[in-house]
Length: 236
Image (cartoon, rainbow, N blue to C red; front, top):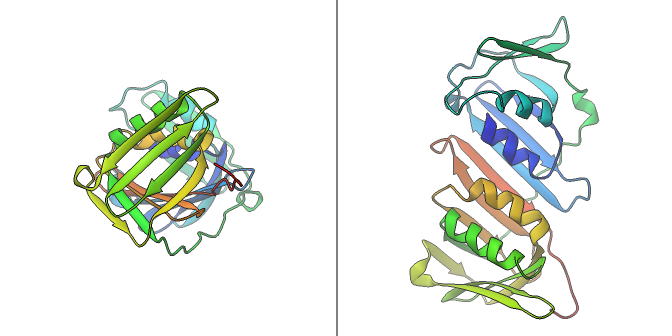
């Protein structure tokens, strides 16, 4: 549950949790409508999944506060009483009753269907390190790709950082045509803390095109799609 909350918390403070028969679905967009997350978690990722389909609006901070009291191996039980309108979160001896938010007040965006022209598959640790290095000199990162190379580059006022990965160093590289696009590290760096520990991240983009990142956790039971609008500059 901790990684679910941390992933959503990258761009929002409140989220609607759609509990389906066989999975949990979350769709969130940041207040500026620059970044979006689609998160699907299969019921198999949970120790117990007994519920009727429902939508709950939750303040992520409250769940995070309870999680922080336990250890990595502690289980959290969530029990919702529709009659009382209360969600009970249990951690060991602790019961915390939370009144959910009205789910109709939370924006649940439609996930865009993008024809991504080019993409790479890279280890989460390598990409996270590249973003962290880039952030040391600037906030706007240029991602570029051709048929043999994927590059992360930032030009600061006095310094620059370039991290290049050849096709042989990547798990996969598909490039229809060379492209470069610019994105804000203010949005990417917090996400790097999430995907930095996963084996593989798929990064798709095109010339001044939205960025799409895909990765999984919980042994593949949790699937994340992250979308970020490009920064369009006349000269970068």
